[in-house]
Image 1: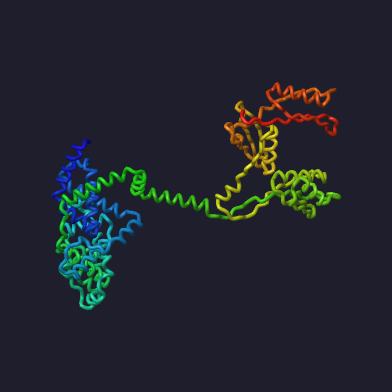
Image 2: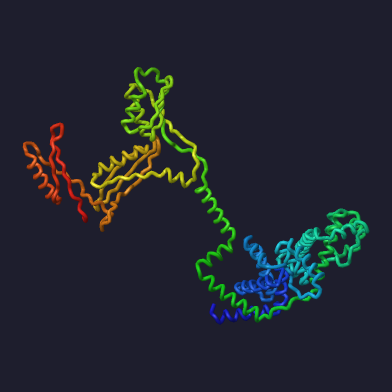
Length: 196
Length: 344
């Protein structure tokens, strides 16, 4: 491929990325757990996508194709040798999901900690599924296309992932709240409902 | 309603007003804890959705960073080391396999473990009965004269045992000496004397290596053959040795040897090279054997010496030192010493 052709392909790639840039970057930050790692993941994904851009036949499927590269990149990163993961964890502070600008740090910080603990109980694919469905608002049909699985399988995976997240949060349920539930009887709060 | 169904329903927002579910949660503390965790999770997700996202990085900045990364990656990939690191990073299982294989190799070769080592040989003759006036000291003296000083001879009833023999060949010789001295024809039983020792595989291999050094300077092929055979026999090997000299003056030793009778023969080709420092130092500086026949009957020593010198000169050997001596048997011996040439 000549230099001009390579330049043209690169331009085309960046043009296709532009409309999904903001969402994709946000997804990477949420998937990685913090802004810095998310930005690294995003840039690595772009690098990998640029190298593989020639294999993309249908440009209309660019979004799903790019998100698949992001998910695979995240999966590969989590497969790093244990010593490299440890080194990276030492280097980073507390995970902070998307590093949002917060107005009320105490309550929101606690909520984010809970979310990060819940998400850390998931495998890479499950984490991507939950982030895309619960936080990015992707419909099940789009997730089915992205992961190459039927709708039913995606719903089952979502359910299993939620169950895992719940289990991870059980030790964090305040003790007095548990006792209160036993004494006063359970009353489901409205916020406990999750979208399905 | 059972707990399993409740836990499934906790994922479903439509079950929020399910009376059966609420009733179960009142009664079951375990499911109630899960419901609380579910509430925590929903709250955390809600907060996350409400939170203002951090500002996005402009695409042109991302592009500049990616292009810089791409250039850096290209330059990094050009070194052999980076190829190796990249290859191993892509195949972590291969790296783990290499590491494991290396560890196993080091463990097997360097970590000592117990093994059995042959430290000597013993010869025994069982139920040989009365051997007359034979005293064990006689055999000790004979074997001592043969160079085996640390042997132990025991006579226990009808059994006779010679221990402390260094090699199998020594054991054979001792058995033969015993048979000659006593006149008995019983078959000797040669057994190995083993010792349990601790050592690494590396140490075992090093111990089993045998080095035979022979100074071949001035020796004929037959003499070299004998010297090699003698040294191998001392080490307990039976060997057939054949030494030949090729046209370039290089000697080749062909060796067929076995550890003991019945072993499969191992054949080895050995090349002897001179260790000198001259330009042709890898060639042996010894001329091919030259046969010179001189009739000594009725000739004086001086005449014999002169005739030998003349015949050697005809073969190209100058300035030989020839001496004639008379042996105890009255036969004349002619000794010829030739200066080794520096360059041939």
